[in-house]
Length: 347
Image (tube, rainbow, N blue to C red; front, side, top):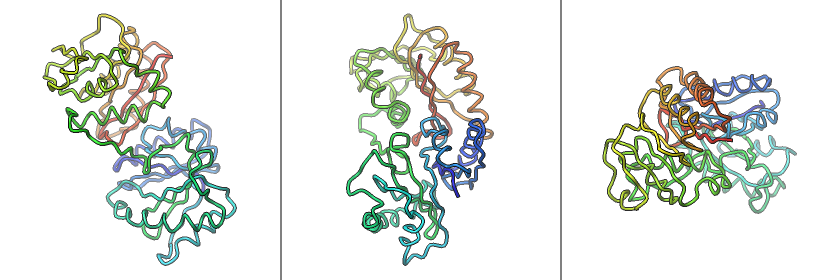
């Protein structure tokens, strides 16, 4: 079997499968997706896994936490010797710069965490003895992934370090600091890590830049922006936590964030308001069309059904109505639930 294996949030396997199938078709690459409800992953089977990996970049996939090129699927593994069939499957397939032993983030697969930890310690020396794994991590070489979906069922796969999630399971391990006003702060922190690269974060988040936080209360996203030393206009009829106001970087306007507009152009606009996704997409487009901001991060709350269709519709609507040439990236983040997070910037 060749193709891709991608991790996702449990329950969003149909959306991931639909996205993979559509994007492969748009790239004129034959393939079909397979997914089981609540498995936490989907498989895109195709004739050329390398071409699929190039065409369906992890950074461009919305519902994929991680994207890996399949090397082999191994079923019926003997618990007494899982290593030998893996070495045989890898054969002379090249050298790897690192090894990650993982499992999908699902209720069924989470009990495999202990196996994943112990198996990695046993597999590494065997790989190095065969010359398949470097002694030290080498980011110039592909990364080898062993993905256990059951005790006797695993995928061997590889990733390109420059175009894959840099965290095991595709999950950034972020800690909620005690002074964070709400858990929603983790969503914006993850968005900045996942949707922007290090160079973009350095260039686009400079002290003294200006931002608006629409629907700000109780101040989680405003708090994240102040930690980057941005000056923030927080728009919400509800109150903000006092320690956020005490930063001296925040102006709180008691107004409806959905209708408020700035007096002058801002560097950033962020928005996590609970509203119909098409209405949010249209309002975000207005911000760019009118030139009210240069960059934005916003969430689109998805319906319970036809979530991939609604995602494509909203993103197309946003880009069409913005009237600008934009760079747009979207992800369903680990800290998201029934939503996706979008980053947009003027080119």
